[in-house]
Length: 304
Image (tube, rainbow, N blue to C red):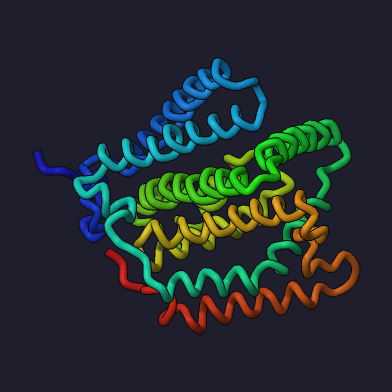
């Protein structure tokens, strides 16, 4: 029986998608993601037999299992089921370039003030008065998440810094990119959706699944940046490098503060709390100049 045009995947996608309809591809992605996160949670409970619950070691172990089973597992299972070219789908078959890494460093160097300004605006947001109870609950969740993060980053030793950079910086960055950009963004964009829409929709989902309302906007912007890096280069290693750099900078600056080497509040760099945010605007302008004016040089536009 001939396959209807609606049920067939786009031939131009180049990732060897199977003959599942677009809706079924999305359903498979959602089901595998939920299943893998449940399995990661179950495996994480085993860590309580090795380390005291909520200790730094316990949280590091849980993070490793969530990244390995939840994120990497989702990406690999979905890619194997949906594509005859799973490595190409996930962007694992294309390496990065020195110019792309240079572009990432430039973007972060000039973009921190703008991102900090957006973060500050987001933290100042309030829900309507009739949702005061909801806002209080959300803030309590975020306070608990902050305690967890600070526990994971509590080590002042060089060894602890290295472990945190490897786990929180590098492995988390790679795992989340493999899942959200390599897998989710590919699947969302596989039904003929505009690439820009797929990037931003994935970025919104990425931020929502962190369950931090008062960090929602900056995380959407970061997710979109990672998404465009993946869209332009076709390499998961480039977006993962940007993600890992963002996480690792946070880890390093927190460690330096713990050691008393710096007391500066890095999340306030370039933030204007009153008046026109001139520094943030200049920061945004420089980011756009790099993305628009230098994209052809720094980031390949050739797609698989």
